[in-house]
Length: 373
Image 1 (cartoon, rainbow, N blue to C red):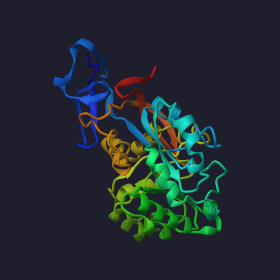
Image 2 (cartoon, rainbow, N blue to C red):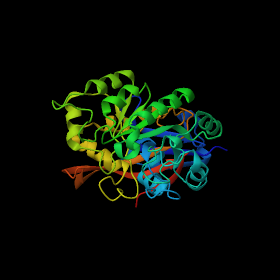
Image 3 (cartoon, rainbow, N blue to C red):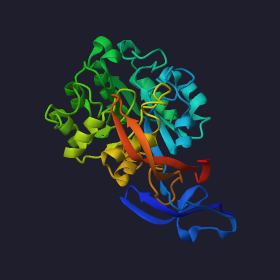
Image 4 (cartoon, helix red, strand yellow):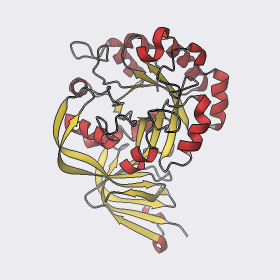
C-alpha cells in the first residue's frame, strides 16, 4: 500500500514556471505525484493555509565540518531546522579528511549534505591558509579515484584571497581549472581581498563555475566606480558563470546588491557561507539572508529560484530543486510574516524591515522532519 501525503491550501511557488498559485501538492512514497496516483487508504493531509510551498531549499555554501575544523556548525541546525533540505559544504574538507566528513557529517545528518571538495588535500582542517603550499594540492588521479565512490561531491572549491594563497597568486586557480576540466565538475571560487585581482580570477572561469561572495562590497569587486560591471564580470556572466551571494561574515553588502539590482537582472544564487562564528550575526540563516534580498526589492519568485532551480542547475542535481513528477519530495514550507526587524549586512549597515521569511514545515523524502512551534 502506498503512503500518500497531501499538502493542502498552500501558495505553491514553482521556480521553473516562475509562478505562485494556490493549489495542493501530492506526494506518494516520498516522490512528487499526480492526483490520480493518490492512495486514499493511507493518506495524511497537512493543511498549510497561509503558507508558501516550495521545492526544498538548497544552501550551496556552508561550513559544517564540526569534527575537524574550527568553523563547523551542526548540519541540521542550519539545514532542516531552518527549512533547508540540501546543504553543500564549501571546501571544509579536502580528500585527506573526506572519509571522516562522510562518517561524521554526511551519514548521520537529517539534512542532505553535499560537498565542494577543497582543491587542497587538507581543506580547512589545518587552518585557513590551505593554498599557501602548492605541494598540498590534490593530484588529478587522487581526485578521480575519490569521485568514483563519492557521489556527494558536486564540485571543487578554491579560496582565492591573499590570506589563503599567500605568495602563490593565481597559480592555485590555474591548477583548479585543470582539475575541473579533467573531471567535468564546476569550481566554486571564493573572491575576497587581492591579490590575486578579480581581473585575473574571472577570465579563468568557464560555463557552470560559481563565484561566491560576488556582492562583497570590498575594493576590487565586480562593480566599477560608476557602479557598472567590470568587463571581466560581464564577460564571465555571458559565458555562463553564476554569481552567488555567499553572505558570510564579511562578504555581503546591501549597497553592492542594490546597485547591481538597479542595473542588471542576471540570475544569481543565494547562499549563506554560514559557520559557527557568524550564525548569530550577521548571517543567521538562509531565510534571514533571503529576507534581506526581499527588503532590497527582489520578488519572492526570484528569491526562491535563487535557492532552488538555480543551485539545481549549477550542481547538475536530478532529484532536488523542483516539483518534477517522480522526483524526491523534499519540500520547504515557509511563511512571510509582518515583523519589524533590524537586519545588518557584513559591513554593519542596518536596514529596518517589516517582513520576514520564516520556516514553518520541512519535509525530506515526503516525511515531516521539522515543524515550527
